[in-house]
View 1 (cartoon, rainbow, N blue to C red):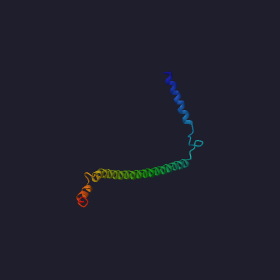
View 2 (spheres, rainbow, N blue to C red):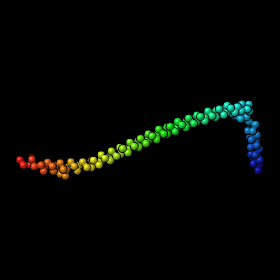
View 3 (cartoon, rainbow, N blue to C red):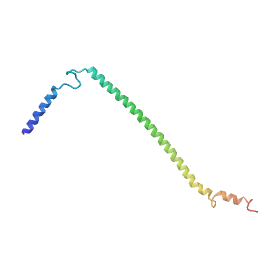
View 4 (cartoon, helix red, strand yellow):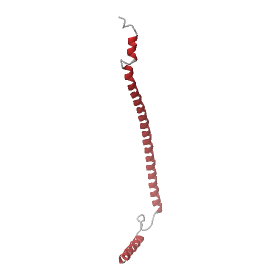
Length: 113
């Protein structure tokens, strides 16, 4: 119980001390509101500029990502086309199956010697 009372009195002293302490922004307890407002407006303008700059960077990055994505899709399609051609190639050029070997056999010019 005594501990609670001593804590309360300590809190009261702390409050009283803070009440009498001059504001850190103030000089001799007086505030130059124009200067404070001017400083705040300066900070706000700075943050707005940073925000615009960040938005610009985000826009640039998203444009870059979109371009990279389109490039990836194009490369993937080209790769798919190449793979499809690779699958078709062996069938066409295989001498046992390919039409080119049949064409040379069926022409009849070189076979009748």
